[in-house]
Image (tube, rainbow, N blue to C red; front, top):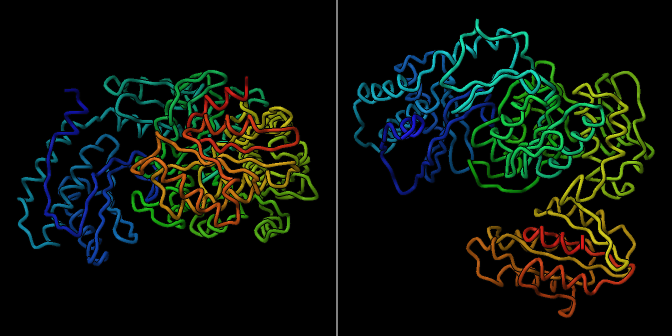
Length: 578
């Protein structure tokens, strides 16, 4: 058993339970997140028939008592209340995060005993057990390096195996078991690089890729993290979902890197937090209903709170780029003191007007051109029609993504010419932006492939393509089985904005998630019929590959097809590349 396994299993702390309460496993917070910008531990408690204020008051009392007994008088206690439960958290030193889990569980043990009038363990003994884990986990050399890095104004990234100081070309990495003394570090060779975080319900992948393209156009070695891979230049470091802090650390430790573009998703923010507090810029593209019900994030405004955690990554002079056209983004912006650069499709948006009046940077569209206001003067950057991603202006969501990337690029200090070159050179194809409204030609017809899967993204794609002239329209629809019946019906109704002549409903055997084969297709068919379609306009397929094949063999010159692909992506793309 290695050291980490020993720490993870060092203690088993039982607490009183009841049928109307559920406590999820405590987890480590390694950086800024939904609750605050501190490392520590958090636990999610769900209940019915209990006053949340009673739970949080008990937490404040018992967590504070445990922290003080552990000698962590300088550490903090916090909580967040949501419908049906609370998040309970403590902060802890960076070298004590496994101990922090046991400290949080100990505090909850005494909270539960008081809530349920149950017997509690011996306080001194339980605290002594946690202190034993603390002694095993303690790493004074790490704390010394953290303090020294802060004094030198350079970022430090920590995980179970490695510690690094600085980013990219200015970074150095050590094993956590072989850390140097601060005086033995060559601080002159360590520095931070321009870093941007991009989040949102939709558009974050495209915005991240577009920002990286702009950075490349400036001659810099740029890299990105995403839900698909980590890449530096043309070199893919690893494939997989790297939208969490692990992907960020992998990217920022690459010695070739000069500019970092990090896509961050809700899951990584809520599970572990974000990897740094030294970002030059961050963006929230939008907030919409998607993946609710995890970690106590049950509503769209609560999801906005989670997305806005990126503002806690910003260095003192960092920029937060925000979508002024999104109601949830506008509302949550009231809760941050960050330096906001608004962007909008409308030059007369009230927040854009206010920004110009107060001499604050912002970006917008005016008379068909992308414009940046630098606080003093308006600068025409590029005509919208010259940005291929916008499909001549039809893809309004991609105009917003371009505006977000523009703000981030300028906040990172990238030159205007690189901005123009990047925006003009980035294409909506399978090379530059795979899976995002990629266009193909087949038998004289236009075929678009998109990985959109939630109502917001599907609506954006369908609205954009519905404006294109077509002889006939075909759409392929499928949905993951873990969405509710209502969600599947709503997404289907949204997709019908594409005004298809033929709908092909397909099964997703790998995404049934508790449903029987045919259930989801039945819901798609029922919803389509309820919207006035005839049965002969609806086809069924057993897989995305079969559905794509059925559509492709029916296409004639002048037709348009939209393939919303959740699985079999490579097979579908291979058909179109053939």
